[in-house]
Length: 625
Image 1 (cartoon, rainbow, N blue to C red):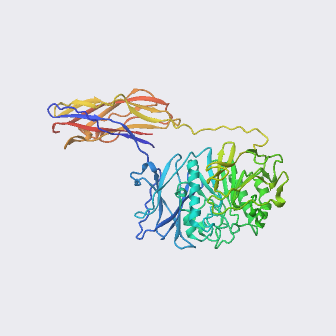
Image 2: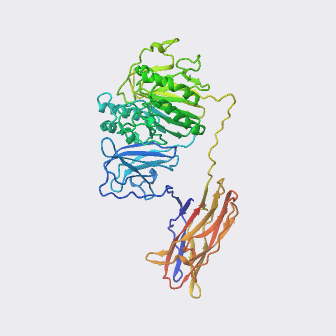
Image 3: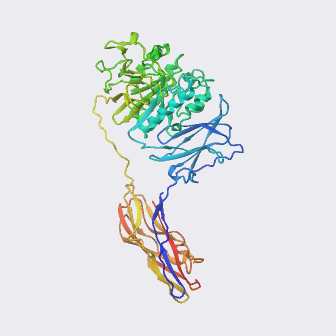
């Protein structure tokens, strides 16, 4: 239910013959909204925990986000959230929503880790949040939701691997610079997707602190991917909570000491599936394929595109392409991915950029596809594989000779890659998800001899396959909410009841409210009601009770199913008059759309004992729909 209230006294006055006069004022409309979830107070902790390492991550759907962090103590902790517009001087309103956290002991580096899932978020809304408990809140951070349907962009970052250069500060600066450049160029991107290897050494917390230091990781949701440098401890799992995660033993290299697992989520028109490619021996690749198959079978029809993400690139341009484990995955994965209708695979590990041809079952799908083509058309089973270069500049691998993988038409590069690039400069990949295409663009976040910051290294539009028939598409917008509201007719002049006339034992005054126009264009034709309630009348320190005012509602111009409310007598003899909220007009479900004009005659009857004065009150009009 939406409520709209108006109250604001006007400056005009009436006069009193002998003892009393009164004024009734109706003024401008104001609207307020409350975040629709019950607020839960975090338990007060005697020794509040220090909160560090806050990161915003993806949830299971567009209206969810996950906040994860480290804490110094196992106290009651939570995340407090409110629309940014509701904060006043940085203070959270009493209507803020509080999400209780799950807190667990760390198995590496001591302390505790916490996370909470923020759900029920609204689209097109800026939110502010903080972590902790009363008296020990973290700084306030913010994020913004976009439309929950339709096109969107996300960014893919290859191997930040903070610490790989031996200089954590330099690596961190490069990482922060890439995030700053990317978000400045694309402020409305909706996800950050990881290629894995967030840090150089899995259990070294100083590297994790450096990786998490940019505030952009608290403003845009991170989609974590586990790399071979992240897998050696539980720190990765402690820092990132992921949705819909399968933690079966086969999806780990060592379930007791290492991080791992596979997970999935749907965001708008994309089914994302992220797997732990560190596990590949002893049936692990088969377990990954089984997991991907089960997810696609259960949820593939809910999305237009399927995007796989994992760390160990199987079609890449540098030395890791020759690794024994890469050769195993090249045997185990491609046919399954083609059969499952995967559209795009995002990979890391080889620290150089590459974009494959459309590959089907591990072979070039179209022999005529030209190297570097800027538009490709998927046939059934066609998959594009992209390997990201370093997003931080901590480590680069040179493109190696293709050897036995040489493309006869292009002997200097591999048969499976359409584009290979290494400029030893930072870059990131932007993926634009459109209604009938995925656009992949590798972009410089550091200038090179070949281009300035923000310039394009490679760009391709991937057109999906629509089978043998002719698919017909149409965008159906959300049904227009229409509008429901009211306005005061004319200049909203003072409702002046003039001089009250003395009758036998009482004073009497009358008048009429300024007419109201109520309009309802909502397709739902939901019920509505307009009500009014008067405050006590006052003149300085003198006053008399609101109950003495009554009214007779009228529908002045019919429409929208408006029915006049019941007459309310002055409470001079009995009752509360308009001191209680009373219905001016209402309509039932299914009423016609349009507008109506409403009015009401006012009657004021009060005792002659009321002191002389020039009194006024405020009539508050409330619309409920």
